[in-house]
Amino acid sequence: MIRDSLKTRRFLPFSTLAVFLLSGCSALNLDIWNDKQGVTQSNYPPFGSVKDFVLPMDVYDLDNVRRAYVQEARFKVLGSCLKKFGFTMPKHDVTPIRYPKNAAYLGWLGEKDVAHYGYLGPKDQDAEEFAALDGLRMFVIPAEQDAAHSGIGASRVNGIKIPKMGCAGEAERALNAGATGLDGTKLVKEYDFKRLHSLMEDAAVTGFKDKRIAEAAVRWSDCMKSKGFSYKEPFEAQSDPLWQAGYSGRGRRAVSTLEIKTAVADEQCRLQVNYSGVRRAAYVDSQNAIIIKNRDLLQRLQNLMETRYANATEILE
Image (cartoon, rainbow, N blue to C red; front, side, top):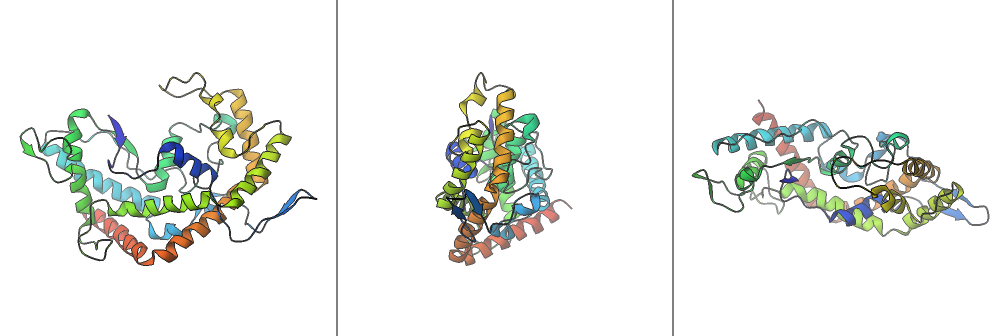
């Protein structure tokens, strides 16, 4: 069975999240659209490298290297727990996430190498793109290990009592040891750390409603028309059903010449209208608004993340 490495991972439905990831924003300064001249005078900084991917809420999270360290410790505890039931830890990857954090939020195509791979990107990039948001990769849990892993569906496996919330819960408790709960008490819950990423999703929802994204999409659409393509917004091009035509759901789908041409034009137009720069400004605004309303909660989340990292170093010694 294929599922997330954390069974309780909170994500919006894929189709909904995809819209937010491919469309969102708010801003530091207003774009001024001159209808007569047909040009944009923008105060948004140009967006052109991974250094531009930083967003305000990132300061409360661990970087990719420390995230990976925590995951390595988590899997060590998880593997030891599964061993008690006679199981071997399933194959998993604990190397740092390769895809830049926030690249999906900001509608950035620069990491996909669209001239070769179209919207599909290099092998396994889709999985890395979504893992970059919260640092969690998916892996395969054999059906016979499911109850021991999750604590759901049975109280014992092979005659041995399953710990609360399974071996996954045991791993989270080891990482959370000594941390303060999000309500200010010592009763920290196993998956409290995921609240940070749900707040980031809340910022995505808010940013998606910002009218400046729609304005940027109009400019992008005009650019695409000049190149012979008719789409209203980037998401429409990136999710065109044509790219899925003939795909059976097995293996890696084929990428057509038309998809590559479309994706190349799309990337050029996003750069031309500074689409990701507008989105970044929007997410800065929407995340800052959430920070203002949740300062105490975010401070506790930051402390929790640091505690998890400190515990990971001890687990891996």
